[in-house]
Image (cartoon, rainbow, N blue to C red; front, side, top):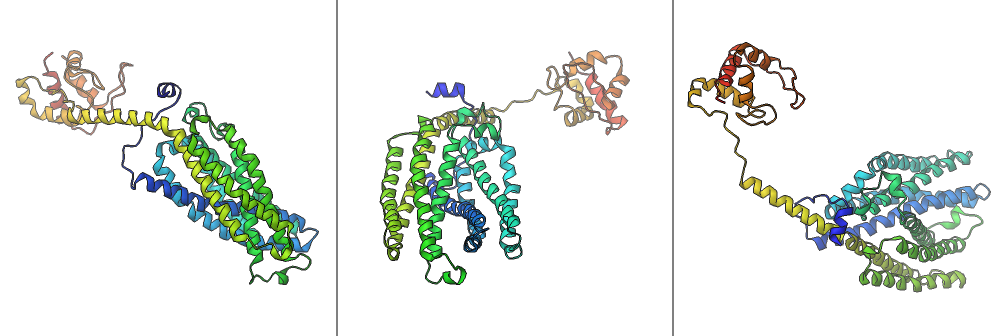
Length: 445
């Protein structure tokens, strides 16, 4: 299998450096920091989508306009936390999978670099929407347009990250991928993206349920028609619907992933996560359909169960990544070992440059030899072609034309296609060129 993979897959050399921490610790840091980061990314995206939906509904219902404002106030905080918490997983994955991450980034380079201006614009739009809310109260369509633009960017930016991280799992595709949009067409990208969007809505539903349900939250001060129970019920319903959608999309994700990353550990992790999520979903359903006073009774259990599910799913993501890249990493290890062997042999057996001086009679031209070594020896040797022709060939051409050789040294042209253009040495004095020409012309054939 390794031989077949090597034939059809680009195999770069790895970076032969020790990891800064034990590998197991870096893996733990990667999984934990990524989960913390992705939760706030989910909240950032889900809250932006909910704000837009409430804004549109708020054109006819002032309570929903106010709800949109309340949700929008949380977006900038969640955005900041998402950015700060994104540093650790980015550094961890760059360290653990440096060559794979770099290769995928290079193949999607243009769009990857575009993340910086896109994120900047999206963040500015969220602040603009937040701080012009009251100013644009009489021009709600403009406020909606600003948030719609931010929502579109927040939907697109994670897709860039997903395409990049997804591509690093498939070195066998590196030779055929021609940029971001080519990588976007890989069969598992869309299901993974839909799964991410559904997760964002599920997490945001839980967040709104808690945020609106706080005892110190002055709900009645802001809303006239809407009740706290109604908003919490809608938030819980969103979480339930998004979780059901994940159960539908999840198998599609697995069906579109190559089987190379599957083993019994991965199946066990995914099934365990799903099994823990089911009781939580049942509790949400009972809360929605039960007595209004009991809607928040099992909220803590729901959050813990779904949190454990997220940990299982995040761990499963790493298991698949490790399995999928293992054969390619073995090939990289072989290539890196070969490179290190050749490098070690080169250091232990350095190539001794051929000494241009082969005749003791040349000692009278010691100054010319010194000038030659300082200015010419990197391109010319006595009898062998290096970058330029050997010295013996120069002597043959200029045996009876020392002035011609001096002129050529000062301002050379290009005579033959087999040699590169020689740089001029006009910085040498006439005396230096005289000594150099005498030295070259005394070389024996």
